[in-house]
Structures are given as C-alpha cells and as structure tokens.
Length: 166
View 1 (cartoon, helix red, strand yellow):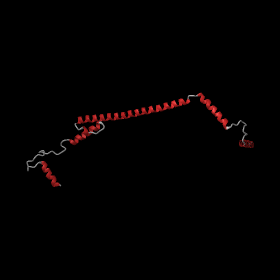
View 2: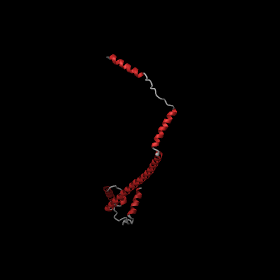
View 3: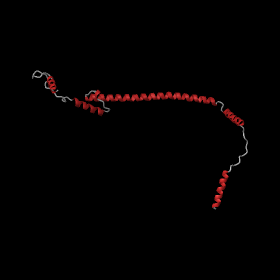
View 4: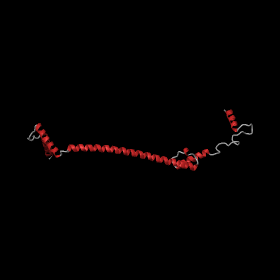
C-alpha cells in the first residue's frame, strides 16, 4: 500500500515537470494589436463624448471649493482668535472688579492686591493691614519736635546717636 502511494506521488511530480503543449491559436502582429486597441478606445470614447468638458468643469469646481474653504477657514480662525481675546478680557475685568471690591471692603489700595480669588485677595489685604498697623513703629513723645532738654529735637538726637555708632 505504501508502494502505491509512493508511485502515485512520483507520477504526479513527473506530470508537473513536463510542460504542456501550447494550444495552437492565432497570433497577432503589433499593427493588428494596435488597431484592435484603438478601435476599442474609440468605441469607449463614443459612449462619453463630453468627458473632457466634464473633467475640466469638475477641476474648476474643486478649485473654487478649495478657495472658498480657505476663506472660510480664515474667517473661522479669526473668529476663534477674537473669542479667545474676548474671554481673556472678560476674565481680566472680573479680576479687576474683584480686587477693587476687596480693596474697598478692607480699605487698602487695589494696586497692592494680586490674588486670583476673593479668598487670596482678602488674605493679602489682611497681611497689608497687619504690616501697616499703627503701633508697629515706636511713638515719639514729642513727635520729633524740639525736646526740653538741650533744645535739640529727637530727630537731631537720633542722628547724633547714629553718627556715634558708625
């Protein structure tokens, strides 16, 4: 049985190696082939006589559409830029109004506030007030005027003391 399978495989390989005989058919010259192709193209072009005109119109339409799209794209880009600018201006205006309101409420200059939220501005205002509180500096009994002792002002006495220290 193994011999039968082996013989069949050898027969199939031998058949594959042999080349089949070419069928006898008509052969064409190059001129005949060219005329056949030209006739076929002429028949196909006759079906669609205005193809070239339609192709040119389609190209013009595509070009006009692209030009219109670029104008539309320019307008969209400009609108987006203006929208971004408007949003930035609105935010800056709201921030300015917030700082002015907190400054008025806390009685501090609005130009010293730079927080981005109401809480931050109030915290800054409280810090400014704590720093600028009266009593943070020594108070002079005579207000810097001439003292009774020696006729010199406190200012002059301080200047003399500073000169001695240096």
